[in-house]
Length: 183
Image (cartoon, rainbow, N blue to C red; front, side, top):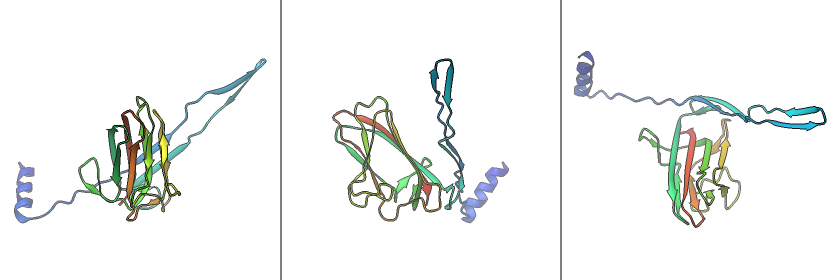
């Protein structure tokens, strides 16, 4: 009952409650590989360490992100979708305008026959991660493209925030794109 009274008091007095969002965690890419060679009676084994172990907190500096946006779908042959990093929506339905991208992953479904392409040559394209005019990366079926930039600079979005996901094949192709960074 006390919570209900508090709600009505805040509502009646016009006090706005500000929602605070935090985004922290750890991202690990750990190869679980066995690589060995047997020569006669000797066996040599190669071991691997983490490819990536990144802990981040909420914020806008190095090793910090404030939000993540996930987009997924299925594209028909030759269909493309443009993800606008300057005007996206997160999993809570909140508007997100990235200023810096520190994490970008594009995954092509293993059931795809054709690859998906991520990047794009359209106007206002997000090109700071590609370094080329055409700026397209092909992600094969079952594959993933991963970019991580934990430093304070990351990948600047600015006014160029269009990231195109395209199916250049003749069959439908499913994708998932994860974009993490700061506003």
